[in-house]
Length: 323
Image (cartoon, rainbow, N blue to C red; front, side, top):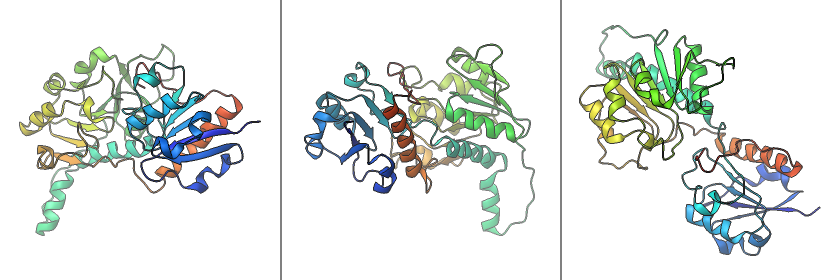
């Protein structure tokens, strides 16, 4: 049987070589960051694994590799993968959705507790040597609304339910009657976002970025929210209208925000978000941990085994919708 030629497109180094050992007997693996680096292998390539390459290089590879039969993205976000040459092609595209979701669920829980327990106040008093007890707020029996109920949203919901919270979820396609709702107490359609937001003590954004979700959470949503409500974003930065969020935070119309993703990254040094005391800011690293790259490589290996055997791939993306 002919070997598959697997191209791994990476800005610098790709996955550690030992992580790819399970497929070495079946595949010829070529790692590169330019068409020149891939050379003659482009003509025979059947698989493209985007580890960390630019959108332009990925587009060039797709155009130069006539035998491509599958493209996989290490990340869940597909901002640099949805170019016309791939979207309009019959080549299946899969992503790393679910690989990083548990860590993001943990960050969402951290952000909720950060504001509920007033961690900044605790820290200020500790530094000042003050012993001043105050009332903290439980998150038990509070309501969390999840905008985008995919893998990340489910991980948030499971952790919130374990803490005794009421869980609402916004989903593009509502579950069929009789299906298992998991940790969700009530589902809402996209058109009901403002209604759901008004019920929430915490609003967690976990939606992918598409034309429909760009600035989905904006002025109308913030106007509907409780003054003590907190917004958390573990999805994609531009799903939130950042200017509207800054206004709501600055004017005290909502209590706070816990943000791991932003409209422009790296977040510019002059962004007002850095200076707002009611913001918990993470530099898009909530899903970074010691094993995350290994987990991403292992998921690709499991996908490759399915591809090799002719089995259905997991996480096949609807390229028109973007997720």
